[in-house]
Picture 1 (cartoon, rainbow, N blue to C red):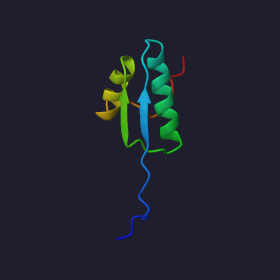
Picture 2 (picture 1 turned 90 degrees about the vertical axis):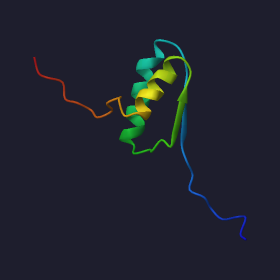
Picture 3 (picture 1 turned 120 degrees about the vertical axis):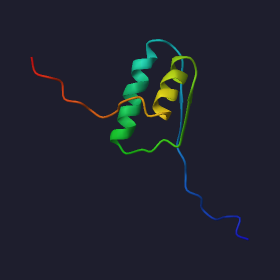
Length: 70
């Protein structure tokens, strides 16, 4: 048995609490997605837990949308 075999590294993300950070969390998730960094596990506290749950269930839209011209 080879105890030194390489395992695929996984990425975890912990999001903090605080109402203002909710918008920041979405920005961080968007930036990670743009860099094609896959998140294997996500957790959070307070608003971070709310954003993490929405992201985990696919409810947070990370795709950049063009704003309509006025």
